[in-house]
Image (cartoon, rainbow, N blue to C red; front, side):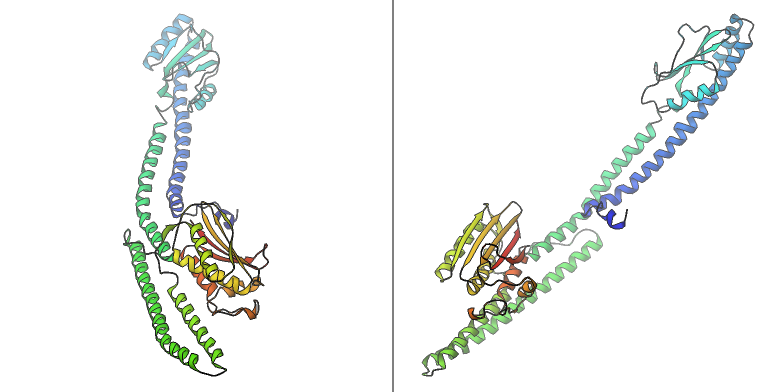
Length: 439
């Protein structure tokens, strides 16, 4: 498997990757210790203990075979069996025929073959009658002899205790480590939430906490946020001041031109009005959609109010379709400005604008379509840049702005954590602009 192929199976979240880093060594150690433990205790130690007992049983069988009669064999072998703590019955009143072992008796898998290899003549071994003892029967010349002894002489008592203790301790320590890790990752999530909120135009209270590195990152974020706020405030104040300062001379020029009896006065007056519109557009762009705070609003009502205002302004705007219902956390003034820019572009380059709204549990989509010439696919990225003018691709006779309409709409969409998407309207043949926002 390649590195790229392995990346598909790696968790994407920080919690998942941290848990993987935490659990992988623990599980590996568990497997290694378990394999070594089973091999040494269940196999080597059990086989060695069983072999030692088999030597004692072999000596008993030898005494029985060498005895001149069954009575003598029972007497000699009985004394030795008592000394070895082995119960002997000759002849065996209940001979064991066949093998019996509980399914979870792992060490029994080694006890049985070891005894068969070291003791010829075994007719059966019973490990299931009593899990604390071993019962077996051996054929001899003096008859079947029954032997029984404690199970702990051939295998370790409760050999699974080490595994249970090891697994239980590992689970407990993993839970403790996970809780500690979760507590360490909580400041990172708060930092991410504050950064995401700031990217959407909201100021979320944040105080650096956690480890030293996380505190440093949090302090750097606060410093960056303060610098950006100062820069945006200075830019807005500067352009507001420029707009305010220029309005006075523009007003004087408009008054002077209106009183002039000159054939060129109307054209110059239109130029003054165009300059006024440009100043207003610059100021709108500088404000960057941060005039209001996010509130829960009904997007359908917002769209309906926008269409009514557009109609009163003489724009041919209509609602095509609204699907879904509910409220969303939006900056209504900013969203209204973005849609006004899109509607203005639509009626400027086409004959009408049709608006749609789609609400789903995860997304909110405002759509503005027109029947104009549209924008070629290769020029759509350029069209969303500030001060971009694509009159060659649109309608040169429709009048032009300063190239900020789509840029303002895109910035407002980004502040809401969404995007502005341009495409061709399959229904009207012109431009289709989608503001896609997450709910």
